[in-house]
Length: 130
Image 1 (tube, rainbow, N blue to C red):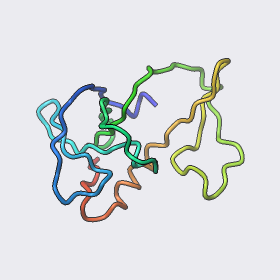
Image 2 (cartoon, rainbow, N blue to C red):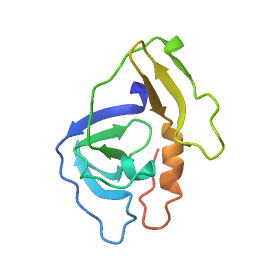
Image 3 (cartoon, rainbow, N blue to C red):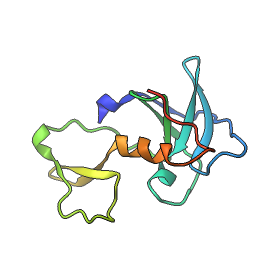
């Protein structure tokens, strides 16, 4: 959701942190501040494919999520957003809603659950700060 984002950047260099968890890409300098940058793909449970090219700065926590491809954003009426139907207890914990249009159905990532996952990574993780 756009209210959860404070900035979108591409092609930035990330400084790797030795001894960090695999999900933590490193530190990213933006707007005169350092942010922990996490691989969104790994946080969602997928293997790392290529180094992320895009970075989104989250609005309510000092954390950056990196990903490979950005297709654009979509503005839809509230009625186009609905709960995931029949989600099993072991289903994707980061997907609780989807957006439906005439052409496709896309998942909406539940950002608070990502922050919980980051906090649970252990001592090699840099915690999101609000």
